[in-house]
Amino acid sequence: MQTINATDVRKDWGRFIDSVVRDKPKLIKRSRDLIFAINFDMLKEILLEDKLRITLMTEDDGSVTGVVEQLDITGNAADEDQLIKELADEVIAYAQDYYEEFSYWYSAPNRREHLPYVLAVLACEPDNVVKELFECQVGKK
Image (cartoon, rainbow, N blue to C red; front, side, top):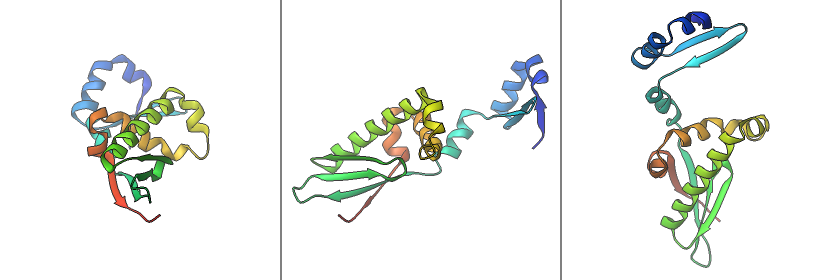
C-alpha cells in the first residue's frame, strides 16, 4: 500500500479527509510511525465481520446462564431475553472501560485480542449491539 507523508496530509487536510471518506483508505507515514485512515462505514464492515458468540445454558432452577466467549463475560437471568439484555449492557460497559483505560487493557496480554470486538461494540449504536454482534448458540452445562 502506498504511503502518504504526514506533512503532505497536514498541508491539505480537507482534501485528504474527503479522499478517505469518498475514495479509499490511506496509510500515513510520519517518521517511523504508520497510521491507517479509513472511513467509518468501511471500518464497521470490517469489524462487524466476526460476531460475539453467546453460549446459552438452562440451569436446573430454570434460569439461563450465558457466556460471551471472546470477552469472557458471563451472566445469569430468569429468562433468555433478560440475559441477552444484561450481557449486552455488560459488553457495552466493558468496551467503554477498555477504551477509556486503553493503555492498561491493550497492554494486558490476555486482553489485547479483545480490541477488534471492543471497537466493533463501540462502532454500534447501543440498541443495535445484540442485533449486529450477538450470535447465540445453545450449550451444555
